[in-house]
Every structure is written in structure tokens, then in C-alpha cells.
Image 1 (cartoon, rainbow, N blue to C red):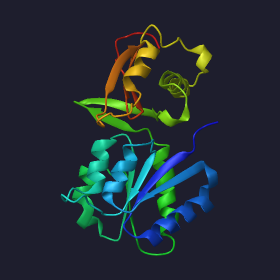
Image 2 (image 1 turned 90 degrees about the vertical axis):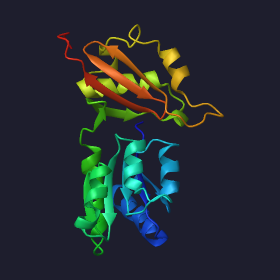
Image 3 (image 1 turned 30 degrees about the horizontal axis):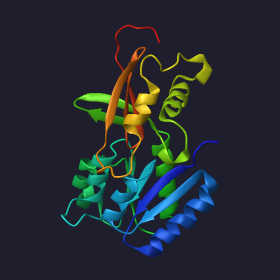
Image 4 (image 1 turned 180 degrees about the horizontal axis):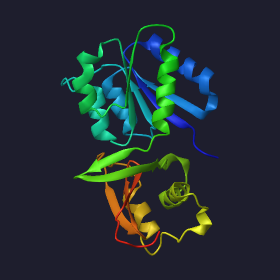
Amino acid sequence: MARAQTVLHVDDDPNLLQLSRESFRRAVGADVEVVTAGTAEEGLAVLGSRPVDCVVSDSVALPDGTPFVVSAHRSRPGVGIVLFTAKDWDDVRADADAGGVGAYVQKAGAGDFARVIAEVSALAHRPRRIGDGGEEWEFLTTHDWNAGGEIGTTIAVALASYVGAAVDELEPLFPAVDVDTLEALLRPKSGDDGRDVRVRFPYRSWEFAASSRGDVAIRSVRDGTEE
């Protein structure tokens, strides 16, 4: 069964966070899990500990003044962000640009959450591009380390969906990459210092990038190889 999408909502108003959970539950039911955080620090902790498909955030900041959306974008560049704030656009434009914000919704009334939910849905179905040293990577999926499966299986399933084929119709990832070694390198271990280990490997006419946070991205190497 497919994992429910996870939305992280960060806001310093606990009543609004409760309303967020109730609004998403009424609108989309079990298809979306809403995780809430009352501070920017708590939000970053969530991003570092579990798969998150989209972020909804007020204009909160870390103790050093860094806007949360900027830190979130640096931490998880493939995650779509909805800036949901009472501030006018001109007041948050710079932070939104630096944070790779995909949508802006101003807090104005009871119908706000309908717009937020619509923007979250749009971002979830929009191809996400991850820049890496001038290269363009397309985000595929986030592997859930706590679900018990192997990241090699997650990559194969995501690739099948990406190309519109069944998993058993694809060439196996091995010998492009030793999936057991990939699992050993990337799976978080007790006592890790939180560094994000990343591995890149070629497969047919693509290159994959996978990280210990579970993010998987793909790019075409355009070397003329048939897909």
C-alpha cells in the first residue's frame, strides 16, 4: 500500500495547527498525514527525521534570524513549500525567493485552508527540480527508513512509475549499483552525527542520486543511450 503523503505545518499558533490537522482530515482524509511543529527548530528536526512531501509554514525563524523556509529549502531542496502567513507578499518576497517557496497564501479568513490544501495538492503533483552544482535533478521519491523496505526497492518502484512501466519490465539496478552496499552506506545508524550521505550512480541513460535522508532524484545524462 502506498505511503500517505506527509505535510509538515510549522506555525507558532497551536490553535491554527489544530485547525490545520482538522481541515486536512476533512478534505483529504487518510491520504495525507499532517505533522505539526510550533517552532522553526522543531520543524527542522522533523525534516531531518522522516520523509516529508510538502511544507506549510508561517513566517517563523530560527534563533539566529534565518527564516525557516530558507533553512528548510537548504535541508530538503526537493520539498515543496507553501508560505502561509499574515504578512503581505512584499514583506516576505525575499525570504520566499531564497527559500524556494512554491506558493504563497495570505492568512485572511475562514476559507484560507481550502487554498492551502489546493496549493499542497498542486505542489505534490508537480515535478520537483533539485539544483546540484548547476545540474538539474528531478525529485522522484523519499524512502521511509522506518517502513522496513530497502531503498533499492523504493528506487525501482519510483523509476517504474516515472517511465510508466511495471517494475519487472525494467532492467535490474544491479550491476549499475550494488543495492546491498547502497543500503549499508545510506541507512541511518545509531550515533550518526546527522550528516547527509549522498550516492550517485548511472543507470542506462540516467543518473540517480540517493541520500541518507531518503531522497531519491534522477537526471538524464543524454549520452545517446536508448531508454
